Image (tube, rainbow, N blue to C red; front, side):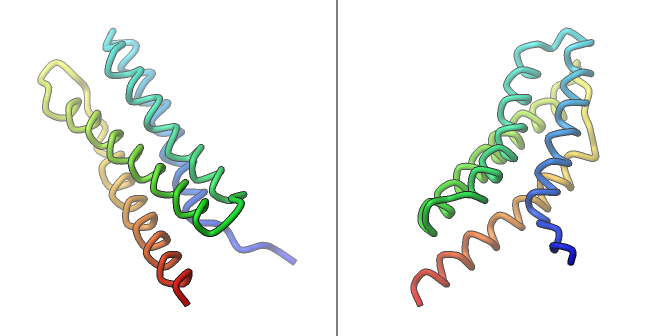
Length: 118
């Protein structure tokens, strides 16, 4: 019997791995400040999603996913700075991945909230 793949966990892990790779590029270009911030926020998304998988209650689950969504927004901010700053590299693959993960998180949170009111 095979368990169904948890899409939000898979996508957040994919994001973290891409962020790590991109931050290595930033480090090689000596863009340490933004690289460090991006590494923290980008990997924190998945860490909070993983924590949510073992939440103590539905409210705790929703709270942890909301934190993940906030970290994702911060990640988007740092990526946007990289995109717009002429001396910084950008990583086009990360934009669609962050957007997709944001939509998934939003849907899970709204569904969980709706189901908790029943």
